[in-house]
Length: 68
Image (tube, rainbow, N blue to C red; front, side):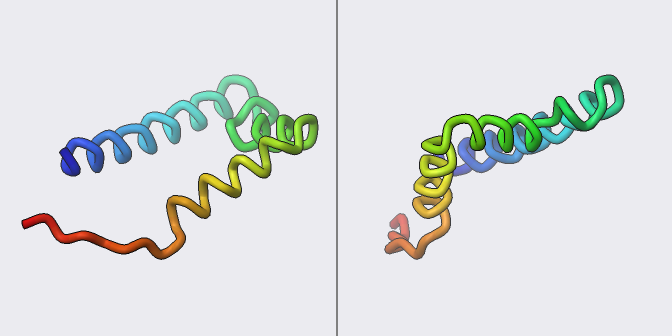
């Protein structure tokens, strides 16, 4: 299952990157994912808090269990 998760994460990052490149090419930088996220975080500060919690959950040291 972890191999599927790895592939899913890589595919998602690639697709979002390609989408952002297409948006910049067709609509300019105002419509990019990062600009929209910045706009939303300014309008709704709880989005910044939720993003911080998610990033902390993903990158803070956790106990790593080795599968047998």
